[in-house]
Image (tube, rainbow, N blue to C red; front, side):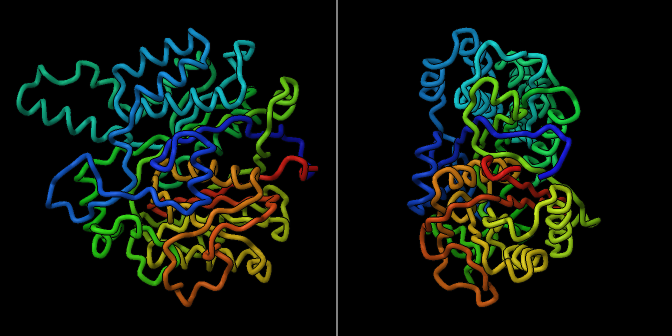
Length: 430
């Protein structure tokens, strides 16, 4: 690929979903076709219509923190422990994901802290913490968390991660609904290519749902409410005729992005090259999919990265398990790739993970890069009766061997916010 821009690669990854909080466990669960979906544990309000999701609310923070501290430099581990002590649920998960990705990248004290950026994908992340404090405030104002004015802010994620790592480059959050983490990836690329950073830590923040959030999404018909409250593992079913809405889930992941020569100079392991990440808008604030907008985004990404459609061989689909959204995305893929669409391998990570919302692009990118490295694609599960309008290869029959070279990761957010990314096996790059 001819370009004079600095080349950016992925050198570290981390994951935390109900399917696992380490890369090997997570990938094995995906290949096994396991579902992360259970009944929610953090609320008991009978009035909430939808009662299923991917739940980390009882996650064992102490065990993870101890495991990380045993491997981290003493100063970094101490900062992590101190900051996790008071941080809300979602912020703690962001810090743990960043520390885990730091370890996976094999970083050390020799990294210039002024040339490391921190990007957090997500917004309105600590809603449950805010609501819980508001309920305390209504009874006795002085009993709220004294740090609430700081800890309710999304920027506390970026500040906390940068403090844990000891990095002093740019640090900020990017919000764009379900495209948030891909938008953060796009900004991370810019920080390395154009703003004098050698590396960036990208974390997809966990959306800490409240029971009110879930009920509101049910009222607009966005999430599953009718058929699977008593059968949660079958609730997320992209491409199946009985799909009825997405399944909200907790999940976070971290990516260490690094300028290629910087990575090579320190002998880093490289998962893939990030070729580009392109964002567009549909010009419509409603949560309705647009085939034209999605196709426009994918086409623009291919043009910007100078990648021919025929070079792409694997699509990690957005595929949320909604009646309109799944078909809209497949139509966009067919518009862009034409006859080559029928040679693509496509799978739906949300069939197992549910929809981790703002963090979904990075959670699913980690899944995609593990498949790139492993040479085996996970299935799209819960397809009991394939929608007759689905005529592409969506990995419906179990895991499949596939030596992918170029991966398209789609993300399409409420409000017509589209952002797609392209990754390439490094030895395939020119």
